[in-house]
Image (cartoon, rainbow, N blue to C red):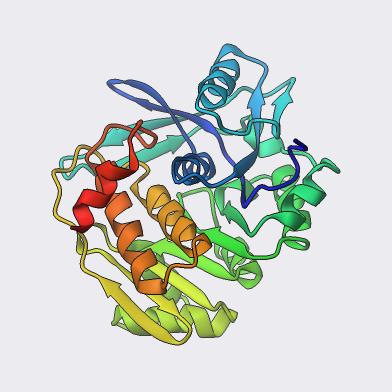
Length: 296
């Protein structure tokens, strides 16, 4: 089968190792989203770049063994595979030291990307991949041809600025952010206090039809088709929050691909994000029934 066809979702950006005091696990928001979409039986490809090193080879081996498409992993001759040094605080929240520059900063255009992205139902991207001119130029070329552009904003200081965030928002059809990111971005334009008003502001100002905000243990809120939908979240025993937001995004996209209504899609996304918070790392192995029991 031609690997450029039949990919429902294409993700673009960082693949890396999250290095915790307890050890290293695969990570990177676009890769996490791709992994969880794959677990929901969605055909997914990731456009990224690894170094010509053992860490890069190991990532290829891990995701190939899981049945994921790694055909669009470029290999950099100069820069090493990405690494992030992650630390958990007392509230199980994570702080990150993101190494730079690394291989995924240098994703170069390949003509094979064009049919891949043109045919996909969704194209998922974030702000980190725009921190370097090389990957940013490739990203913006892809945004010109993608059908439904999904921005997982993923702001990590100091790897973003207001100008690039606004540029990315102007390109997006669907935006996912957490509550801190929503408050930061809308604070540039308004003094709104309510989450509902902030969601509507993002949608209206940037002409984005779908905006969703995650609020940790308080659930999530979706602004879609001029309607606000809310899920109050699921009470779980948190191990760490790494990758929960990425799993959430994969969950909502998977259900929308299945033509679920927005409420069903949001409910499932919240349950998947909550379940991943009970596991170590962003990409644990699991079965669908591990997630759906939260919905009962």
